[in-house]
Figure (cartoon, rainbow, N blue to C red):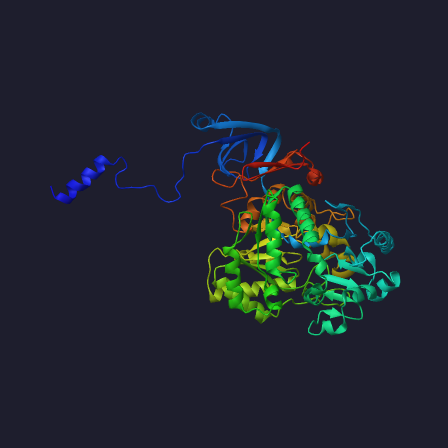
Length: 579
């Protein structure tokens, strides 16, 4: 026998594992196993759709089934059974794949007066659906404003409900008090004379900002960059920090354990924004993670090159913390806000003849998209009207032609209005959709009457079409474009009953199963995190939403009323109330 063979055999004899060694990252023996039992566990896993027990260790799911089927784990580990959820229903932790943490952090500093009702950590704000109701409420709240160093600001104004209120009208209503209206879209601000004077805004400040109107005191879309720097109080650490705590509370109350930000830097100072978000989320040990997304308009407004942007995002990703992180995604802005009537529609357009806006020139968008596509980023595109959907489809064809990419999951964000033909093209091209079904609830009736006509207005957010095509889609709030309440979004999509109680576009309703998938496993798929979150199976993060009732056993109109006990984030229970 050759010496080398003798040596090998000797090694095998003296070493119980031969020449093999434990690979990096290999699982270790589970210790301190916690088994949560429940009345029902809705797993969103087709192979095992229901269970009554789930075992958790080290923030991960170890096993799912019943106490009987988990018996081998119970016998062989240091385990304990936690029965606090035995009368409740466990679902995968809800996902909101399109939020802006800084929007609630800023806007909840102020009063809400919108067409729809709002229940916030800062109070209850009933809706105002007529000009008279709006002005009465505006005067009432403005009269309660005591801080003379900042204007009175109210969020939620919309001219289709509240009438025309620009600089002249606001100045007539409030000749001496600085007052500003933040549009229901968030994409517009209106100021009276006193507010412009208090902020020190002059007509010269508007040079180079075409989306502004000095005479009307109107700043919209990218024109906001002319005004926001004059409002430093928005980002005062104490004010912003309290607002960010409001956002965290809204996330928790909605049962959300993963929130995907869709536009870091919308206020023009992304580094400061990231620092404030991270400080609040990490210091409070919030029971949720927030994933941040860079946005094209931020870099363009700061005159950054594509190369500088890619380097900056790499730096932000390296600075990720446990709960606040960047991965590889990038957001484009195609058209304007649907709430503002600035979405781009193809023929016949808007009834009154006004036009939408393009947020970034198409060639510039294509250049940035191609660079981030080639760098392996998932592309998300703010896209509202069928005109912008056509542009996005053509862009996706160009990207695929230049750099063919499998499983790219380019995401159309918002999905206010598309045609059946466009939906089929998007499906064929491998796109996904992150939709806001609340648009139909709040906008369908009034847009049918004023801007789009009944056929297009009733068919806003055509989710039934996507379900029929088998195309993955998720629901998002884009809070405060909709309440940060995933079950409210499911209700809007399943029922398609408007703010006025009308059932419209009934063929675009989705099944309850599809609706629940859109806030769990399909939302995880849309954002590329399906291997970590979205369903309850061994190996995934132990993120759960705890419900007081089974969504499959309540009437469809009651889905949004299901009470939420709280959440479990990475294995740790987080009740909404400690009572």
